[in-house]
Length: 217
Image (tube, rainbow, N blue to C red):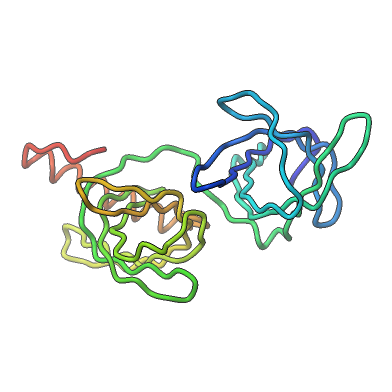
């Protein structure tokens, strides 16, 4: 799935600040990838990563167009003509498919339950799209970068209710109008579930237009 020369996007969280970097895959072996030193997407400066430092990495399979995310850590350095970093690379079944496409996001308060580190947190959504959602954070110890699951209840105009249990990642903690929120990115979303989310957001758009309100983000 990975190939030499493929671009790798790295997300590093230091002191609750997330930075994004780009690197090239120079070589790979079983559960290891060797990359060029990462360069900041905005700063255009080389970043030096510490051994055992953990981060997220993602890449796009050009043959299928699918993007994948995985958790990794720095295993060491390789002294070569071009210095390289060695990162851990998981088995294929540990890769998480993510959505790179932008989806329409609508404001809506849906009943939800967030499961993080084996604990359930009942909550409601602030907004939702087919790629992720924001939920009210009544538990401030939820950390950025944590993986979990979110259970959503989608009410359709047909009076049907759909329950979706989706793997997710915490990508941001923020405050809006005095309310603490957590932004979630959906992972490994099936095509069927994605279509149901698109259907729901489309119905909400129609509802808001009929009411003459703008709740599209």
